[in-house]
Length: 502
Image (tube, rainbow, N blue to C red; front, side, top):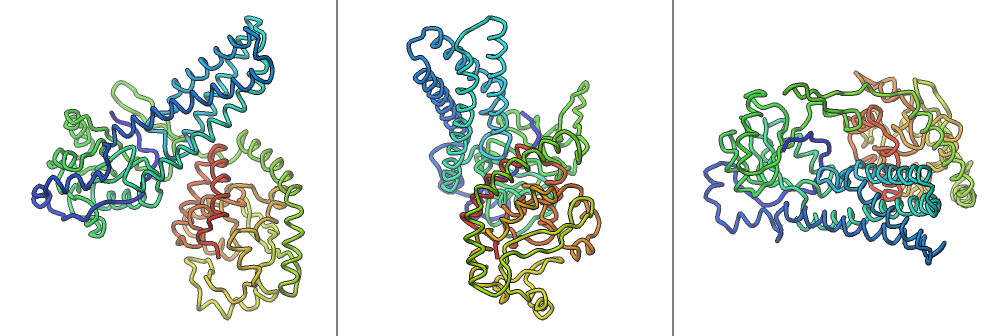
């Protein structure tokens, strides 16, 4: 089975092993068991987790339909029949859309998107049936059961994902993999797996096609050299999948031969796309008589999705400003009492297509902070053109916790309402940063900057400049409404458990 490698994720590497094939073959059975570190193989664990999702989804559908029957008409036979049909149609769409596919669950936004799509299709099917067959009792199902059930399904999947992530800390994973490829490709894939977390993949072996890789990585897991040792690597590591990290020295023919060899071991093949900055929403496959063609859509910087994005910005920013008004008032008072000066701070930033605008924040530094910046530049701890200090003497007492919990950025909601910014997007840069852009970095300005984004939820100031740029460019070219919702959700978690905020 071959499929495109869409998301990288796992918690880390296990064991402490040598790097030669001969040494690995001499390891005892006890050492082999040490790799798995759980009572389940990945395939058994994956099947068990899938059954859990089936049971959970079914229980949620029954609960949502049962609640509607209890509220509206528990004794009506017609309603019972309609509720049963709704559950059957809904469960069928969840299965047909492969919402519990091993390639979708556990990491990324696609699992949630497929649950939403399935729920929408089920509601649409019941609505059409009502019009054609003149069935009574469907209105309550469409207006109440489907929206409520969809939210419960999403909440259930999120809770199970949290449980699965906790299990991954103990060594459980949906797939145990051996990473195969040339040294630079293997090192890159391993680093991405380590950083991007998730319980989807657990690295249990490396197979280098040629020279050695990073010694620090090689010391962490069993390491083989040479494609000829593929079967031994898979068997020794107890892997159920092989990740092909980039091109092999033997070219496309080597990949085909490798897949044939793995048929005997029933091992899945996961191919890492060379288009490392292109995400699933822009990729589609079209086979043409034995020639699988990968279609990559052109990035969208305007159009219908952007209109919807702007509508969501207007609605959510308006609601947020009204709800947070008391919070704004309290923070303003605290800032004014803590140090002399205004409660708010504004600064010129660069927005979409290079247009400048005034960005607003709660003041977290002394009034003359800009004047003191020149004296502190030699203590800069940031990377690239960014200036950052973990213990900046200009930050006020109130400013310390405002920055820690990102409360100083709340006034940017006003920028979102005005249209200078979006709720989700790249970090809004200073003019001095834009002046130092090199290469394709300027593509960050193709869309509006955001109140939050991938930079904010992946470490913020702890990231180096190259990684910050990579995340922003990735978002610019691959953003989606579903991805925006997930970023907003993860932002709340980062605000409660802040990382890199100073």
